[in-house]
Length: 595
Image (cartoon, rainbow, N blue to C red; front, side, top):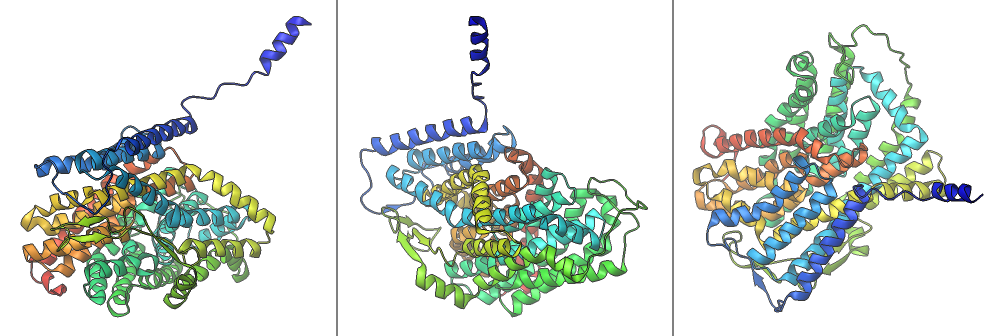
């Protein structure tokens, strides 16, 4: 009996937790970061009691100051792409580097830096994560009820060719979701759709990121352009028109580029008529809406007309070869296909139609303003709001930087998406208990993504309020006659670091305006180039990559996704910089821009 008891006791002994698991690594990183932050807070002997002016060349050597300012971004991207660390670990490392640089080199008061960290993390949680969470919640509901599978079948009814499905879903449908909700919505929805059609998870994530570029400047009902107008005071119609002019060629280039990346050059040429129809119709509609209506409905109109045109075109034109989702030639292969009537199509698309209608209604200016007036709470951040002064040449004169946390809980886009998800869940026959349980499971499944995005936004805010991002921008501004090229890359850098074209415009809009005046080029052009260049940074923005990895069940492989899109992001940003140079100096391109 005695030996048996011993064996039984050993058999029930619990295994030790794997010390290399993401949970344990994340926990240890969080503990270390908290200890460092606590030490900085407690050891500061002279906490700031008044305003602090940003310093853009703290070392006295602009190249050295630039290298220090670039370190957090290099560390963040390098940790993911080269060291292949999980995103939350890379984000913690980048945040720690940004804090050390802010306090030790840029002389930002430590408590102010920590306050900025909390402010940035809070902004990451709301509104950013509050957009991502309900989108993934809706996706999980459609999977649970079988609507997502039904949606996949209706899409294959339009075309069996994976290249054309990619145009329809990743580019056109993604543009629609970018126009209505923005942030991570198009990447989340389109990545999931591509996976159901048979695309590999990493591939689906990377292709969705590449496609989600051109629509970004007019995303979320035109908020990036409106913000750019607010920060620069330049004409809103002129900004909207100029951004659209810059983007028109890329509306045509990006669909070709997307299919080239996916299927190769020869396979891309096989479907060039469909690609051309997609790009030309999207580009023309985008320009006409932006130039003559305004930035609000640009993406929604362009995407809707493009989807309708592509569906009609595909009824009369078919590719000679049919390509499967894994790249195999399926020409002549008989596939079981069910023709769906209008009722079945409505059944499959109902959740997403509800999302589109609700989010569109949520963004109507009159309704949005009413909800904000009734429920929004603006909380100035103590010790930070108007305590940091932007200095020339980033601003024309010393200007206090605002730091207000806006808790617009009802008018927030995420609240609209959550409300749409509940309506869609009820329409799909789920009860309140099932909806609550699915929401709890979804919240748990995105816990690492939430932590990562909070850390990413904290990093971006620390760089912004300490002046590190401005130091990087000023380094580009030293390029003189080549500034139109590098000024476009400033926008790319701003979106890549903050995850938002809106944030990039707020961050660098004044710098673009001041530098453009100094070198004698159009201020409207350079402000617009900031927003247009930012769309190419969107595909490598860490929050976008985290959303893609979360939805495709590839969390922990953010470095792989980053490597998939990095060179494409750089190449397209460089092409856009070249176009902006032509518009700045070369006739007849200069005639396209009002000075």
